[in-house]
Amino acid sequence: MPGLRAPSACLTFPVTLRGDESRAGAWLSATAPASRLYNGGTVGGGQGSPGPHVGSDLDFVLFQVHGHKGVKFQNWAKTYGCCPEMYYQPTSVEEIREVLALARQQNKRVKVVGGGHSPSDIACTDGFMIHMGKMNRVLKVDMEKKQVTVEAGILLADLHPQLDKHGLALSNLGAVSDVTAGGVIGSGTHNTGIKHGILATQVVELTLLTPDGTVLVCSESSNAEVFQAARVHLGCLGVILTVTLQCVPQFHLQETTFPSTLKEVLDNLDSHLKKSEYFRFLWFPHSENVSVIYQDHTNKPPSSSANWFWDYAIGFYLLEFLLWISTFVPGLVGWINRFFFWLLFNGKKENCNLSHKIFTYECRFKQHVQDWAIPREKTKEALLELKAMLEAHPKVVAHYPVEVRFTRADDILLSPCFQRDSCYMNIIMYRPYGKDVPRLDYWLAYETIMKKVGGRPHWAKAHNCTRKDFEKMYPAFRKFCAIREKLDPTGMFLNAYLEKVFY
Image (cartoon, rainbow, N blue to C red; front, side, top):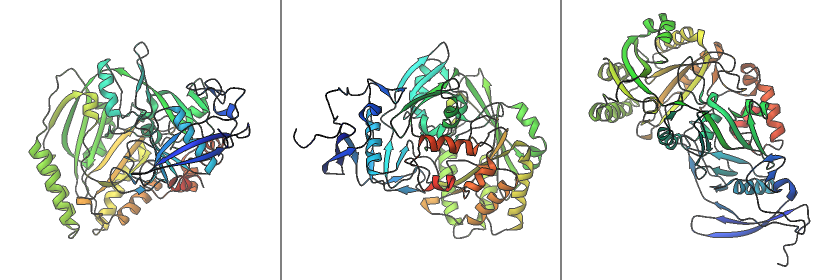
């Protein structure tokens, strides 16, 4: 083929850029050595999937990269979005390598996305976006070790039935399952249970494709420092390809919900934590009302108190309408919080089911949220200060609930629970019918309190922190930065959100 000959140090890529209705072709030259990208299935010294053979008598290799132009990305809550220059849905490691090689050649930034549930701009880019949804297989189930290896793009909602078939389960889960295995660990997703860590603590091994095409197998015994960083990777170390999760035998949970008061719960916090393996509570701002939630192992058969009228007609449709009315009359918010506590949370309820059906629930409302992890011993102080702030500033309104959860300490470099048992305090402001509600005063007051008590923000959720803040919050922050700079010296995987974090 005349005109395609290239120097031996370069690869030539035919790239098809696919728009909504048209296709365009382009030839691109990448200045990476062929042996670095592919060498008999060994990539940069790490083990990867076998790539195309690069013979000694060839100076170039041809690949075809398919992408979409004109795609608009929005997160689930429609609070953040972007228009990436190119949008890719790879089906193999080789295809991801092609995208990264193209990004290197064109000096483009890259972001990887999964379920799109992060309520912030952490996934946004105007460069190349890689959606991992087509790399969603269960690769291996090790019944002896009770471990499952999956591609990073699998949704947890699709993993649960596969684990059910093998009599396995994850010991803890977040509230939402329409999230990917690679994404859920990357942002430090958590649930509750003081004996349980964030979800990333269940990861025993992962494979990472770095910006230069190297595949690293990471665990406590292999690339241990990278493993310590990559379990909460923020999407800035490369592309997570596979994740191996430690499972437990399948189990059922009984969820018991009952009413209480803020004073009672805070005065007896240690007792509640001992009584229930997965304890959390919901405080209803502008009141003393609290809904306590216990989740514990049970042998009882599945049962449910779910009711369409109360859960949807009242708990969703009526609530959304009243919250919309309150955007014109903000003083109604306190009344709405108290009314719905009386209506929906003023009695005892019990549900039993498989663990993943109790841990997760349908998230109906579009919303803005903040969620900070504070030292567990600061729970009472922080909540009472937040309550006092709302009482002192009646024009500042807060939707229900403030959700309070508890998580065990870990050693993951950028885990909000790094080296300390933590309390997560999640605040929320709904967007009735997509309408934004004034929240700035509430947000700033909350952040001020969280910083005062030594808080660390949830990585997936909006915050106003910068590198100076994170250097104070995280003892290992600079260690993570050094690992990131070594793996991604050109900043290929950075975006506006991450620039605030690292610069």
